[in-house]
Image 1 (spheres, rainbow, N blue to C red):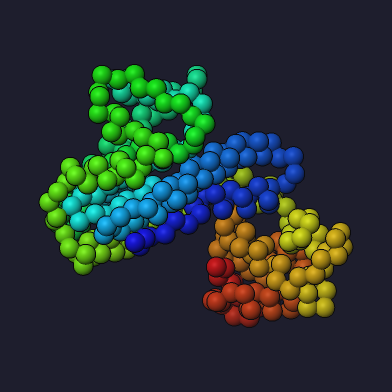
Image 2: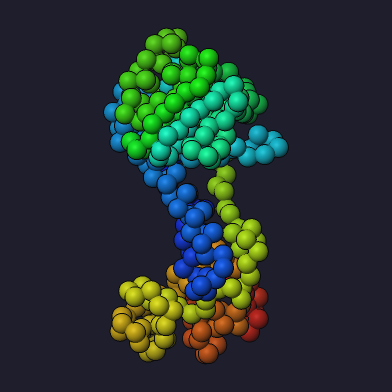
Length: 314
């Protein structure tokens, strides 16, 4: 049973918004596209696990993309599976090429690229989750992990004297068989369905979504963004407000709510609060009254008097 579904991470959605809004030919575009591509690959790898997890048997609870605070910092786990006798962490890796894992050197390499040792990463997640469960719920429960390579176009090579690495690093195709074997290592039932559900809900309630600020991270400001309302049909920032609707002079597409996506982008990239004047500038509408009606209909909360009102964007 999935109690925390997998949803598209905000950092991917926010990067996509930024790449739509940033001015054409901006020098940061190649860098942003590379980062987005890497994040989308990771997300695709995590999604591909869902096909295999559908075949999981017995009572269990699945939580995807869990982010918890250990009292000092946040730590994130791709997938957590709660079984009556133990907890399993899944760390997904969607990589292609020749992958070499060196346990003694604590690194992973692909050609000339170096990465953190994924086993060390998963072991750290195991430790942090164990401490979180004890500090917040007062429980100790066996925790195991698997590093799962999801892309078929990779070959794995282990340079390690640790023979157990073959039980820790696997391909997605062997995920279910490996989980069933691991169940045999933990025969003692520690929690019933009701208690397990309570643990799962506590983890869900403690989850804090990561909200990135790519504008600050890459030293971008408002002047780096395109203004206007983007046509949902042709993608041009050319839509004009006329007679209670939006019309695109390029492809002639008509929309009633094209401005709503622009306001969502403003909330993510600029600020969650907007004034009438700021909205007129961003949407490229000259009429204060038109903008007031649009903001009043879209926003659930308004602060201040009518003339100096500021609107809270979703």
